Amino acid sequence: MNQSTLANLLAGLPLGSLRYFDSLGSTNEVAARWAEAGAPDLSLVVADEQTAGRGRSGRRWYTPAGAALAFSLILRLQEWLPSASAAIGNGNHQIWAEASSLNCALTRLSALGALAVCEALQQRRLLPQIKWPNDVLLTGRKVAGVLVEMQWHGEHPRTAILGIGINVASSSVPHEHLLDFPATSLETVLQRSVDRWELLRQVLTSVVRWRFSWMTAKFLQVWEENLAFRGEQVCILSAGARANNQVVLEGTLMGLFPDGSLKIRTSEGKIHAVQFGELHLRPQHDEPTPDLVSRQYRSV
Ligand code: BTN
Image (cartoon, rainbow, N blue to C red; front, side, top):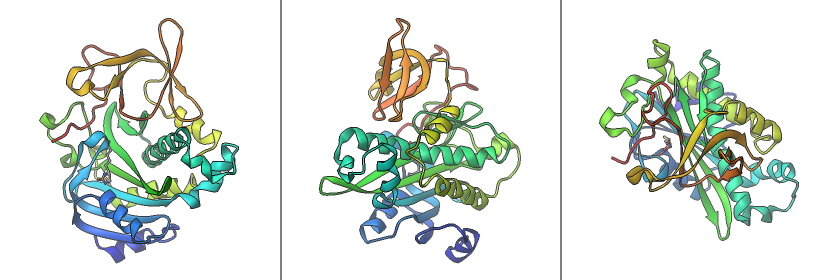
């Protein structure tokens, strides 16, 4: 692949600009620097290989050459804001200074990335699910992850970097000893080869389609319809849980609140809202069934 061929393949999408790399550290990192230098809304950084791919909670994300999709979209929030502020009934841009609204935007933008991957996979007659907030599962295993990072101007978030990584070939799945939980690849599930660039086009098309409706009730509904473990018993683990498995909440996953937080009903019937952040969702099995449980990558 090269930049001009990729530009031709993505022609027709309203991208701001495009940069393609055979190899780089992290597309989120390069996109962040490009955004600081003035890249327009919907500018895209794509890499065949990442040598320092970033995952959530400081984890690493494995992207070997020729095997995965790794890309980052620059979202200029002032372009994405009018629909958002209208949808939540506040035309004042100051709303982004409020922590709760920022959390809501972060959660929804992460979900937007996950939902776009889901919609691209559904076009291949697959049944992907979103493990809240932003992992995409196939056959219960993690096939894609989303990392949204914000850039600030004073007290106001100005730009979101929406980074998406998809395991396409089986060689993009890290070795078992580097995983906390199972992962899979698209080609493993489909049992045939996948055109990565066609997949990229489909994911971007979906992001663009939701561009003016990502803060609406309709978006929430579609996100909820694609949520993994709905109606099932789950545990919410604290960030430290990776070391000591500390369960902070157990209950039935009921769905989502409008701000994108997770609705959990405990056995006493109490409803809890779990906010996006340093929490991890797991289905509640003592001995995880590989087909049902997603795994996230461990720091390497
Ligand atoms: C996670 O599940 O922990 C999130 C993984 C996000 C990985 C993608 S790959 C493209 C972009 N660049 C990065 O460095 N990370 C994201």
